[in-house]
Image (cartoon, rainbow, N blue to C red; front, side, top):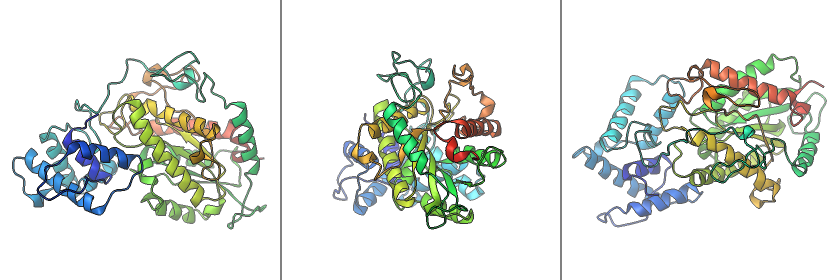
Length: 420
C-alpha cells in the first residue's frame, strides 16, 4: 500500500526513520520512503544521515503544502506527535504547546492529511484507514467455525477460551514458581510478589484504578505489590528499544514503591500502537514484532518474571481520531493470540529463555452497546472521553473491575493474587 507522502514522512519523523542516502538535489523517492518505513516498523535500523535527509524532505513537503513556507518554520513532527499523545491522554497543554500543535494540525490539513493526529493517521477519509465491518463478534463469542478474515474464534483458537492442555501444564509450572522474594530475588517469608503493568495511556488510566480497588480488596494477598508502570503515549513501539523512553520511569516507579526489579514476577501487557493502518496482516505484523521486543526487554529487566498476561484494546467504535479506531482496536486481539500460539509451537523468539510465559489476561473488547454473550459487558459513549478512545472515569472503573475479577478468581492467576 502506498501511503500519502505527507503522512508517510510525518510517521517517518515520529518513528524516526529516513530515506536512502541521496544527493542533496535528487528528487524524493516516496516508494523508497515507504519501504524504509516498513523496514523500521519491522525492527530495522537506519542511519543518522538518512534521518537528516528526511527532515529536509519533510520541510520541502511542508513548503509545497503551504505555498512557500520557509525552511525555518518546519514542524518538528516528533514534538507534534508527543503533544497529541499528551493531549489525548488528558493532559492540559501550555498555551505555547497548544499553539504549536494547532499549527501542526492545520499544516497537515492544508496538505490533504485530514484532521487526525500529526503523524498518527486521522480518520478524515485517508486511504490508509479501513472502514470497520457492520458487525464484529467478540473473540470470546466466536466459534471454531466462525471466521473473521480467516481467523477462527476463541481466545486460544478453535473456539476455545481456555488454554490447550500443553499451555495449561506450562502455566501450572510457572504459577508454582511464583513466591515472595526479597530485594535480591531470593525466596523469603517476608518477601514480595510484584505485579506490573506495561503499555500506554489507556493502560495506565485503567490499571491505576485497578490498583486502587485491588489494594482495598480483602482477596488480595498481603505479599502482593501492584505497580503501575504503564505511561501515557508509550505504546509497544516506545517500549521496544531496550533503552526506550518509558523504561527509566518504570524503574523509578518500582523504587518509589519500595520494591526491586528482581521481585517482579508477573506483568500485564496491553498490546497497542498509535495510528495503525492498512490491512489486518500488515498492522498486526508490526504490533507483534514490537511486542516480541518488549517481552525480551521484560525478561532482561526482570529476571524472575514468570508470566506476562497479554491484553488488547477496549471498544474503538466511538473514536473520533485515528489513534486506534475500529477495526484496529478489535483486531489487536488476534496479535495476542498469534503470539501465544507461536510460543506454544516453539517459536525461538518466544522461548522462555527470552520471554516470560504468555497467557491471556481478561479480554476487554465488546461491540459497544451490543455487548457480548459471555458476561454482557457493554461500552456506551459515556465510558469514553472526548476522543472516543481513552476511557472516562466510568470506563476506567468498568475495565478495572474486569481486571480485578480476572486476577482474583481465575485459576491462571489467583494462586499469586489471592490471600492464601
